Length: 167
Image: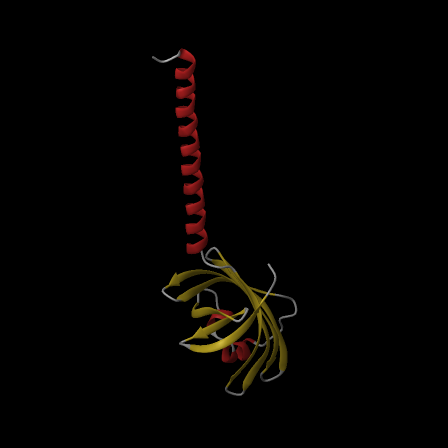
């Protein structure tokens, strides 16, 4: 024989157990979704590296800073270009990128030169890769994390050791 007070308590226990089970399921779903997102989303890259490119008789010495996150990015290139004369290069390249296996394919959509950029276009064309001088150009890079920095490589040849910047 059941007493009405015990019957109400039994229903309350069942309802409380269902609420606890629902809350645990929601917490597990939210946690697993966050973990999947953080694992599958690309790591943001913020770094600066020193470069020296010598092509033919021309030479560029300076720094390249990279920022990449959420399929968009920018790179700032500044330094001295030793060509027919010594000039300054200071420009920002904006791009979109896509991941293809272990490489990122960058496609620039805008190049902004600052007032300090007084490089001769003939020297720029003879020295800098097309990605840094002409909108609409692509650059394929493999980017790997190494000892607190990023290593940029083209065609499996490391080309830039890029020190991490604070976010």
